[in-house]
Length: 405
Image (cartoon, rainbow, N blue to C red; front, side):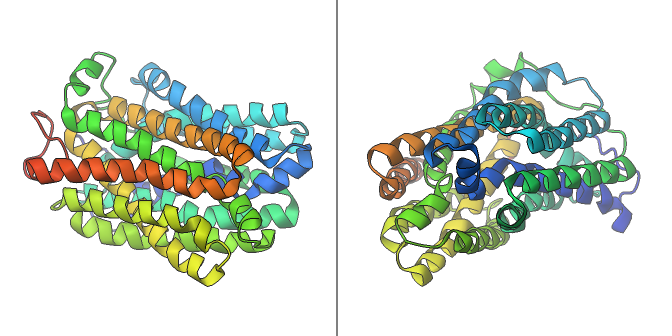
């Protein structure tokens, strides 16, 4: 794979990676910002919290539907110009939120952001590997993933706090300003990056002949569905089940997010050589954590301790997913990643949708158990495959895969 950076060593070689990491930060901050602001948005728009949660569902499903077609449509565009254009539309869509005084207007603004998201995460993983310093592709990918993790660590909790202080519309506006700053940074540091190994629609039949990719897509859909059935409503769960004040829920989001750094650091040390354990163990921990959310919600200190395990396990699972994707679909990276991103967002949207309906029928206390059952089902399946074949990943014959477990 070609490496487009002009500087292959030293600090200047890392500037494109730093720019991409900041871009990942603002995109992920925007995607999950409504999670912490749902009660505020619902009150402002005179909607129920469950109904307002649909902005997460629709956003995610737009990304899911548009990731592949928009990635194919933009496959031949030079990546630097494409990214700058995406950031411009992204920022403008956040400024529009200032005039979103109805649920429909807010939904329209979020759909515009979702279109940019559809392309952004489809090109980001391959671009991160290409622009990293010479011989540091894996570390470059981890750094850009770190930007998305930091968004969970700092972006969402700080955005939630900003929403509580300056209003939820003000929080979205500030994210738009941050996007403009990142746009300038990308303009200054990212070299011209021609489209490379993007793949096409012709790549799809070949991708679906690879057992590891099919397994990855299935796991992504079900695990993310389970995760976001709960995470989308973590603020109302804590408020309604645990009796936690609204202002305190940001602490749980912060603990969950910062624990993601722990999961990434630990996972990155083992995922290349021990992919099976790096997949199964954190999925098991995540399933157990989800099952404990309702029992521990009234016990604040125990809940925070559980959140450390939950956050670390969630990001470790994501790291394992990304590793499998790059290992078994390197020859059609953009198309494979667009499908991954689309399926991931089907899970997010499905989780928000499922959580919305379950919370109305059975209450917020039911969500953790449902999420645990979904993630636990995948964990059990991968464990059985591991015991039977010696690998939790269905390797088969994958022409683009690296050798080894």
